[in-house]
Length: 270
Image 1 (cartoon, rainbow, N blue to C red):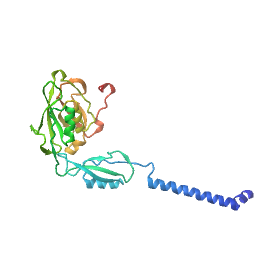
Image 2 (image 1 turned 30 degrees about the vertical axis):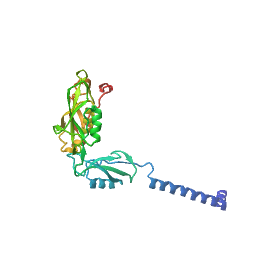
Image 3 (image 1 turned 90 degrees about the horizontal axis):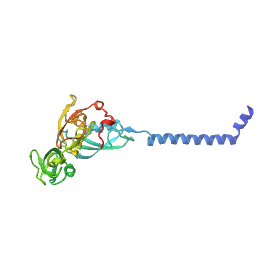
Image 4 (image 1 turned 135 degrees about the horizontal axis):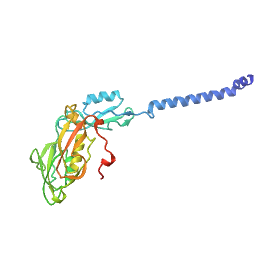
């Protein structure tokens, strides 16, 4: 016992232990400081700001220790003016506190855009031009022609949409397309789980139209409809079973658990 006291009581040992203690304290303080200032390993999920007003988005962002920035605006008909249309990073993304979330809001007044000329284009090319101009593809109507999915005419509100004219952004452009009778068949794609506008885009890509849209009772307004997902479609998925331009009826819900999971054997091969 006396030997141990003599050892730890020696001035050299005391100095060594003191230096070691200071060294460990510095390491501990540095580790704690690093955790506080960099929030190492700690992420928060980005909330969904869609359909909120900017003040509502700002209030929610403050509670989550995030920041929001209005980066751009678009015009979406029937959506509340000034509400959040899109965000980046998207909802559910993992970010550090203090991150800026960029918002695209619905403009208070509609923007005017120029109608492109898509006559003579393929359906795919015409769709890209129409969307790029800030417009939307509407009904696809087919007429006999030697070239399938070649645009024969473009219309807005039942009247010819003159190329170069100015109309409200997000307006719908209907297309008349040619169809060769020997090529008048397409597959019905699987749109289960997709939002309404996404499902419409997929159907158009497959030369099909959106038919009736049946909403669950808890979908009360247009904002709800934008958030709803397809839980049933009719006709259902099947390769080469329908004519081009056929209507696909969509059933939409706000409950994602209502969407059935298809077995691998039910998913058509691409």
